[in-house]
Length: 179
Length: 161
Length: 77
Image (tube, rainbow over all chains, first blue to last red):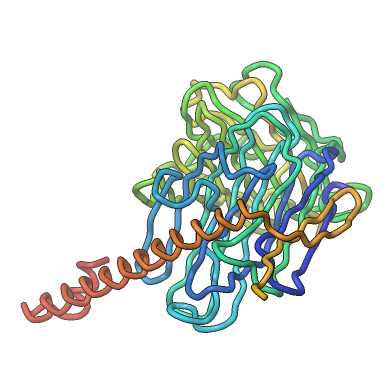
């Protein structure tokens, strides 16, 4: 099967982070799909550690917030090196309802022996006028295979947040040729 | 099975283009609806990457709209038809979906995300102004001068429906 | 008794989920990050509020000069 669920988790109580460890090295790409909320008020940060580390990262982002705010940042912009997106926090400030941020991260060739690219897309829809559509180009500047992924927020990941890790396996079928 | 791997290649030498041919509309009796192409790697110089379907090289048949950020500024344009994203000399990726590729009653639409952490990132919506089913796709440097580098991977998948 | 902050670890090979207390180093890192993030959040919200206020002020001044709403909208597009 080309695309399989490796693991899925939904938090029954708040946690500081969710870690997928011992990721099998038998797939080609990884897809991490999350529905995340922070326990503190306002928009907070979604962060990602790779193999337990927030270091050796480059990223570039592009975002809009629906009320005229647009921007593009890098890992030198002042946010932590392991920033992935903005997420909804608890009700307060610009957040008017309890709502989870949807974020999707794609890691091609995660088990290879060169630097690892990844692509992140997220939205913080929360029924108010200010929301963020945030996309990011990421690079983990290590040649090691990715064996663990840790998702966390600025403060604490709220109960009800979920994360699903999929493995995608390249292959051939249908007589398609490539040259 | 709804997500099907069709073909893939890891370049063992630099290549000016990569072509996927004989794309079927079904596999083992399962009708295929959408295509997903994942490119991961580098180019010999920073390039725009173009896509062409079924040997249609008429660029005006591929109108597009792009939003792009470079880490400090943002912009949007429609200036470069056929383009699906950028690749640079440092590692980046392009991931795109072609909706209803096997349909014969509509133009084909494509959504692409391109990610270069040391350069630019963005998203593109593109339309191929042709109602034929897609049977082949080719990607290359828009300027047709540079090459995809050794080690760059191209993987094509189909989604059944 | 103070709350014990924990993290969830899922072993993808076995499926075993472990709830693990944070180490003192992890707790300190969290505290530092949270403090900085709060400053960043306040700065972000202040910047957005200032931008909206400046936009409203500009629209009011343009209106006072005699521009219509559609002219102001076209100018600010």
